[in-house]
Image 1 (tube, rainbow, N blue to C red):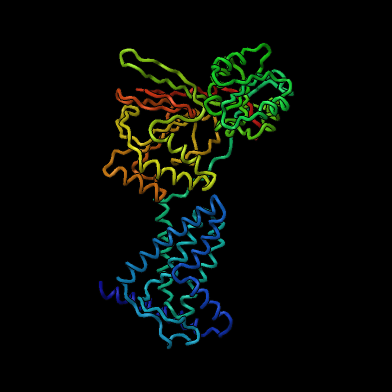
Image 2: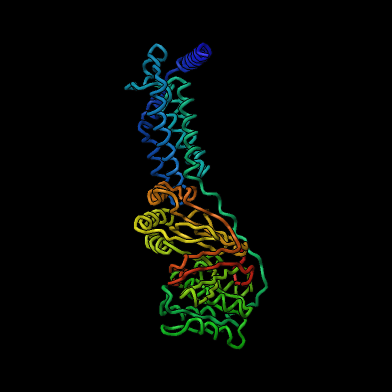
Length: 498
């Protein structure tokens, strides 16, 4: 067995010398200085850190590609320099193998096997390419150039470079498991439905919640200007929102119900629209209005176009049944859910994320918000669909949200017939440390503390203890149990054609 290993080593050594001899025979020129400078630029990963800094200036996938590339590079560098250079001592090429003027100065003194520069170069390029293939392709020539420069400058044998490159590629692929690349978000899909045309708002009753976070004195005026023939009702402080919405929906001649407000306001209006068989026009207003965004209505111009042309689609609605009060005499509350519901720390997480988002952007704001929320919070004991958990977050989305981790942002399909259930649990030992580590490393979605599933019904019971429940941003205290179900394609809503 040892003789075979020695024979293999001799074969690799002969091949190395053969290849180096051909490199030595290349005529001298400006390329010698180029490869020396390129090799020096990659010392200590400086070249790749600079590339990452440029990529990070562009939000979204370029920034994630930079981070993934640096993580892969760090893993490859550590494995190469700490593990393999210790296990595989090897002398570097000597001046007798290459012209002296080509040698890099100073000549490295560590083991030649494997090449750390090659490992870092390939790891960064492959790691970035896993997130954004175009960037990986752009970085590939630089990575190949750095790897070859280590042979051209006499720093390594060719087999050192090959082995180091393999380590780099393996490190990038391995880090993908615990820092996964987000899958692409599916294309927006709508199920068209007939709806009356509302020229200039004719036949449209609009309810405006003046307590919405973005309401100003100009809001009502803008609505009258865009929909001059609409019946517009403003709800002031102290008035019952549900009663005002019902009265507007029952106004004679009403063909469709419009609503300006946040998620809770839109949910109340949706319930009234479904009950009366009216299409809903969700206007972009309020503190948050996720449904209007998912419906494709980002401005009053979008709303006017959809209503004028009668472009509409179908959406599922969620039914929420909450029990609170005494177990012997419970109070049962039934709500309509258009977007999301949560129990535990999720409302605090969302509030912090929204505060940080203008300065940090959504992805980084989500990470910082999760860290702050879970560092100070405590888990809640819940029974979810018959299974008992200690839960940091129990999140239920009406429809499949993306990305498929715990920063749900986009819902491209509004009538998929499912509930998106996401749990972050504290059942394992060292629960807080596990949670904080997964937040710091971006591995929440792939961690054992995370449970993702889809269902058409979900039941959550607090075992008699009160819990805080949030439905479409509206909080409900003292809830002991809650059940969720789906009413498929129950709501017709106006939406611009995709």
